[in-house]
Length: 257
Image (cartoon, rainbow, N blue to C red; front, side):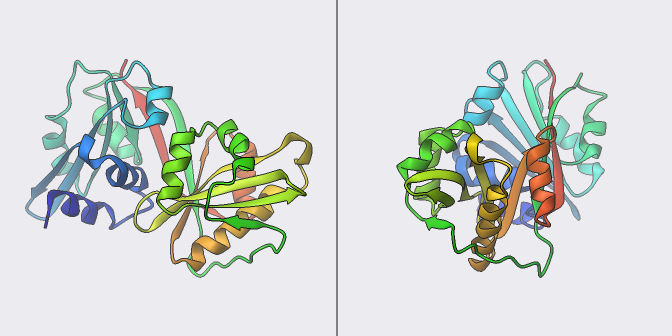
């Protein structure tokens, strides 16, 4: 078994908890300094990713050197992971458990900058497709301005569609009113992102129709859906909860500079 497969196997034991680690390893493993530590029955994973690697991080944390992600089965492994962290580097810690922050705080001065919630479906939950929605497995250029308005770049969008992404949209004639993309985070988890409704078409339930249809097609393809929102995006949180999604994990970003 390769180093990559061993790490992915550990993280996939809880794919929603570790979705950010899985996503980064899937897309950028050749650029990540990844470590797997095994101590008897316990294990730990540490990912050290240059902050310029992922476009979102490069835009959001232009002063950072490294993005740090981790998971471990027991606190006994944490000291071995800690030894690999530079005290001089400007770090962004993306932490999916409070215990990880508590373990780091004696060694780093941490400042919280944002929290993101990942929502998903419950076991056995079903959705229906809206007949008015258009599903496309190729890039529809009419939708690009809406996706780009949600801070996606053309390069990112193109990459997602090369990897099998699809879009779900509502149109009035040739004019898009509401849309989203569904794209691969990793093998089993696919993200419903870039949800955008034009200003004139808001408060009509169009985003709910689009997302419900996206959930239907995601589940039909055998994937685990993920819907991520910033903690202060109350409209997106209300949308997720209104269609029956439940919180799966909270990811907090902390910096030491």
